[in-house]
Amino acid sequence: MEAAQNSEENTSNPQPQPLSKSAQKKLLKQQKFEAKKAEKKAWMKEQKQRDAERKRKEWEEKLAGLSEDERLKLIDSRKELRRERMEKRSEERGQKIERLTKAKENGQNIVVDLEFSNLMTHSEIHSLVQQIMYCYAVNGRSSVPAHLWLTGCQGEMETQLQRLPGFDKWIIEKEKQSYIQAFSDQKDNLVYLTADSETVLDELDPSKVYIVGGLVDRNRWKGITMKKAEEQAIHTAKLPIGTYMKMSSSQVLTVNQVIEILLKFLETKDWKASFFQVIPQRKRSEADSETCQELDGEECKEDNDESERKKKCIEEPSHD
Ligand SMILES: C[S@@+](CC[C@H](N)C(=O)[O-])C[C@H]1O[C@@H](n2cnc3c(N)ncnc32)[C@H](O)[C@@H]1O
Image 1 (cartoon, protein in one colour):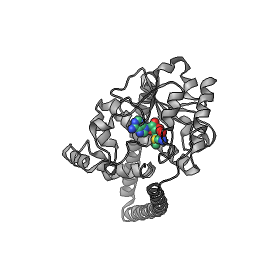
Image 2 (tube, rainbow, N blue to C red):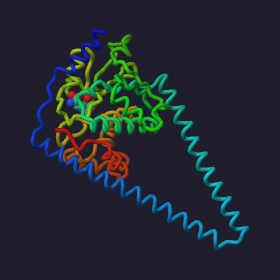
Image 3 (spheres, rainbow, N blue to C red):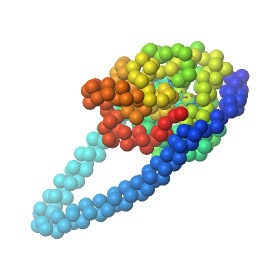
Image 4 (tube, protein in one colour):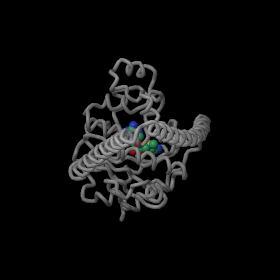
């Protein structure tokens, strides 16, 4: 009860910092980016419809030029191909469910703290929901998935999450209560991850519960997670970014980047590879971008168009 009160006090005390000129510029840039993204989405939808129509026509023309026998054979082989594809998909889905179910029993606990929704705009909440969706997908594909928790899942946050297709079936813990209550029997194992901590994380300890602040705030709520953890008297730690790479600006990452780094680390036990795979090149200083070119292609995967595109979809442009 006391912990819950602390948590409320903590989120109501800090004052938002007014946006600096450069933050205003970035905000404008993001708005332009969002508008372009919507335009592109509409264009892609039309293009998809045109493609489907073209393929349907081609198929009909192909069938029209065949004898009855050939036509039946072709239809059968297409049905077979579809069946095989569906079988493969359902097999993959089954394996994913198995991995996630096992992670529920003994995977690394990672919490997304959703108690900050009163500090975000509607579109920031939307952005956070997209980031969570992305994290869930990455976790599902991981060979060493984590046991993911959404705590403080209430109000608009919960409403927006519930709108996601299939959210009800996600293999993830959804808690209305705070992590302090959900893990009341192991408070000493809670570690709030925050870029403002003095403690550098060197390993992931399976007995610990790592908490990530569910915030999309362009860092206008500077230090809010550190303050919350201090008030709740729980441990804190920052990612060891500085040990492995130089950043072009601050070391504050987005929720999806932090979780993806943790997931990569669970797979590889290699911070450097995890950072280089997840942190976009534009967030690193030039010297480190060159280092990246010297590493093998696997480690520089974010330069791959597809993965960069996915990240851009859900990430805010940058932090101040
Ligand atoms: C967009 S940041 C929110 C920044 C927010 N102003 C704060 O004070 O935490 C989202 C969350 O990712 C985690 N995070 C971001 N960068 C981190 C870093 N370098 N080390 C550890 N955690 C980090 C923190 O949990 C943070 O709350």
